[in-house]
Length: 255
Ligand code: SF4
Ligand code: SF4
Image 1 (cartoon, rainbow, N blue to C red):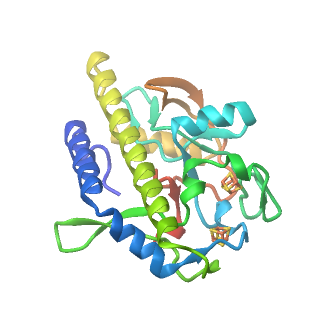
Image 2 (image 1 turned 90 degrees about the horizontal axis):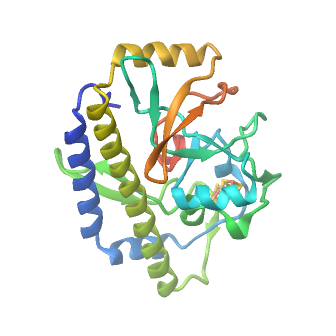
């Protein structure tokens, strides 16, 4: 991953906007036809609801709003803060689902193989594993690919109709758009906050803070949520918890 130090904030914002533009032009029918050819059905094995498959599950603001009504203890600042200023304050783009400290690192809501809040599950959970992701196709040209872990879980769904696929394709695009819009807004707020307060990202300080965290200490941080930066303390690192990429369902599953 390229560090925040290497790419100035305005360029990062432009890159994210370009990514969102590419998403807009990605044909809905292409996604629907990929879903159609895979005809995937979840067998509710629960594997994707664990840290061992997905390092963390990112929550959009609307998910956090829902979560606050279900169980306010069930969310934590997303891992892998993107920025750290020269005074050691770290900044992260949002919240993630809390994982339990069991061997697999199960989602807070996972009970055996069953999701306790299935009807109210969160945006990323609803479309998983049909997620779009950026991948380098032709050198220098980024394309969108979809469907993580194809063929490695679930079963074939002969009842799926093409109309179902189109509905899901729309949800996927809507989710990815919401995710990118969140990331753009986060970067814009950071840019403004740093400018107004004469701050800058300090990579050396960032490394020091991450080492501090990995030694078992909590971090003082600001989390972007609901259009502003909230003061927060990180959790202590759990077993197997490592700084991870800030993707909606982040981890080995998205390879
Ligand atoms: S999406 Fe896949 S990994 Fe997740 S519960 Fe369903 S079958 Fe298991
Ligand atoms: S909320 Fe439910 S579906 Fe989403 S990760 Fe947790 S257990 Fe899985």
